[in-house]
Length: 270
Image 1: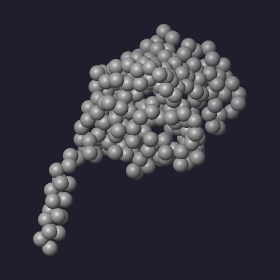
Image 2 (image 1 turned 90 degrees about the horizontal axis):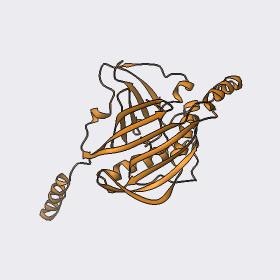
Image 3 (image 1 turned 45 degrees about the vertical axis):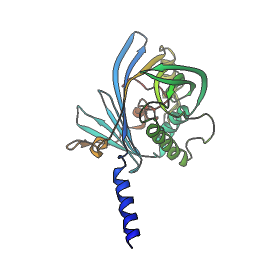
Image 4 (image 1 turned 135 degrees about the vertical axis):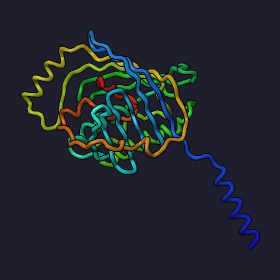
């Protein structure tokens, strides 16, 4: 009995001595060019366990894989709307297009050093609802929280795959955190569920005349820290709104990477 008591006490002491699982906070600078128009912004991505939060000056997106929800928050208006995750219907089709693109990466064979960390280049590209794009991202497994970030991205992708909306073959989702992203989106053939052919033809003609959207993102800081549950919750007092019509959702960056968020899929200007 004494040995058993001592064993239990030792195990309890060892468990309490283990550090709590920490999250990762990534700070990026963005530069977007669309013809004569340019925009500079700062984006922060926080990941801990099965939760992710992406913050810009204009909006915040929280993805909670445990609850199966995404929350899109307007901090200035103090409003938000809620999306089921994995999504269904038209939203599933839109997110599937982004996610399929985000998984279409292949090694470029080159490396760089960014923010003091070595990273490996990957090339990607494909067709999304907005048009055709090419992208190069430099992924690092050496930064703090790289394993945590990768685990979330792949868990999110697996949940989308489970719906059958995203192919299970093709490219790969690289391990690590993307420290740099350079992408070009040529607005072209737009295809949205429920859109009339005549309306789509007019939009496609207008899009074809637009200059490409060129975006660069560079990580400035990566921190490993314990994040509170409140960091991944809708702030108290915010008003819930109805989900916008599907065509209005096409400009949102939903893919992880990503990425970055959503790795791979270049976002529209926020």
